[in-house]
Length: 256
Image (cartoon, rainbow, N blue to C red; front, side):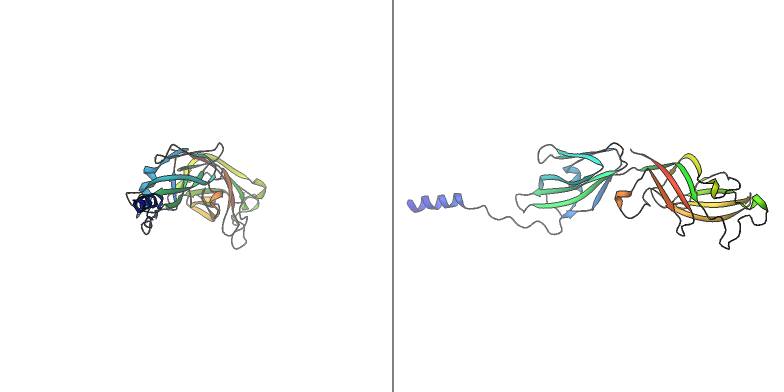
């Protein structure tokens, strides 16, 4: 009888059997996801859709914000019904969080997965464009309107803007006899452009059927360098590859 009681006591104190390792290759499908509204809500049902090679026995254990930029963010609710809520801070054009999700299972060991969620503006408009620098001579060192004399040697400048599929979005009227003293030369408007790889092409107007290309600049709110923290500026100076043309572009953004 004493041996039986000792056996029962030992069984009560024994640790539970060790769980199996998590299924191989379990991960969140992408390193980042995008939202296009100024405020975004993400719950576990959303996260679960992103998980690859998971198992039905898993449920949400915790959801942790590791880092955040440009947003107010919090995790609300009780497990397994936790919800991430984030909204752009005032004055910010984009933002995001790095999210750590830990899952638990009755069969498998806990697993922690990470991804990033961003709020990006889906719409960008150019509201102002200023020409800061342009080549006053052509590639041969001659005046653009070399066949004329006096003031006529100064170029009559206009530009065209193309999207990243080479479709023309806009063409300005020309401004006569421009030189460095005329700068900055500024145009105002409201032109929707792509988020990257738009092309600004500068021309010297000669006639309705003839113009000389002065060069081009690639621009867009995501053409501002390799650091994502610099994306979606309110204004930015873009330069041609040969550094002969500089334009300052002012952007306005819209959200869903």
